[in-house]
Image (cartoon, rainbow, N blue to C red; front, side):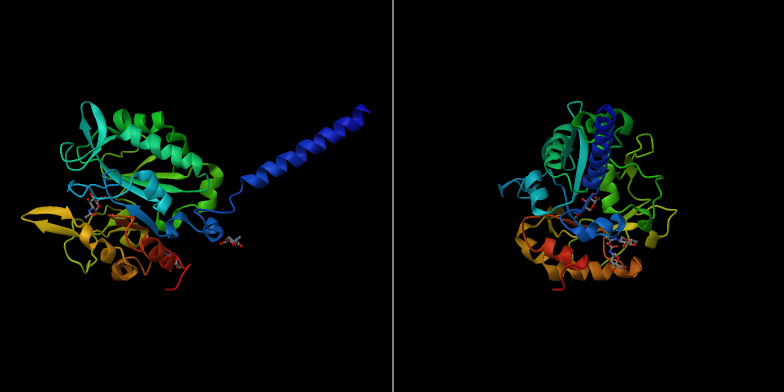
Length: 304
Ligand SMILES: *[C@@H]1O[C@H](CO)[C@@H](O)[C@H](O)[C@H]1NC(C)=O
Ligand SMILES: *[C@@H]1O[C@H](CO)[C@@H](O)[C@H](O)[C@H]1NC(C)=O
Ligand SMILES: CC(=O)N[C@H]1CO[C@H](CO)[C@@H](O)[C@@H]1O
């Protein structure tokens, strides 16, 4: 009897264990089965420029988004960009300075994103944060990631010079539970292994564009990898120069965020990327236009 029971139990444990392994393997990645087997470095993601700078009030000229971060994510945004400054001894997301637009603390922002990540376990998300004041990564940035609960989800690559072709697949990221990729433009010196230096691995087109044709050029980048071995981000937001002040123009958003405009910008950049589409399309007003359809086209899931 005891032997039979033991056999039964060990069989049960083995079956349960294989079931656990089976259910752990991702079958849908960012909404599509096809993406599970594709490298993170070979996917076009739609990004939200100044993601924290949302307001539905047109009087607020320094806003760049209409809807809040959770709504942006629900629309399909999978790259969140934001700029941080110190304000009252805490790290805040603010545009240029915190008088112009104060989006609250980085920690509260990350707590909010963590809630979305928990509710959406099959999604991979990227942050590109900017640190123009060179605020300490280990002393100020890292605690915000730890306290928000995002640090354990953040991917640590084998090195900080990952080629576009070196990145794991989306399925591998999801299976490992490391489904948040964190880039910082200044100050990521490797002291916090999941806060990655942006420009050795990603190049950007120029920012504060005021030309509707979005001519492509390589602006911010760092070596030693070749340009074609970097991922890249197109800054596809149109600004208006109002007496020397660069403002984002909501009136143009439906044209700027159209399939035609996004694809033209993307194809204009393929001369620098060995023919590859942009990894990130950074937009203002992510609730306006057809950006998610443009990404489907660039990812090969739609033709027109
Ligand atoms: C995933 O890719 C590998 C190698 O690129 C291939 O052998 C395998 O068949 C693919 N699996 C699926 C489910 O597409
Ligand atoms: C992914 O690879 C395909 C095939 O090489 C290419 O057409 C596409 O542009 C690539 N996308 C990105 C974002 O690298
Ligand atoms: C106009 C525009 O989108 N500019 C942004 C381009 O990207 C850099 C880095 O993420 C931002 O700092 C710019 O504001």
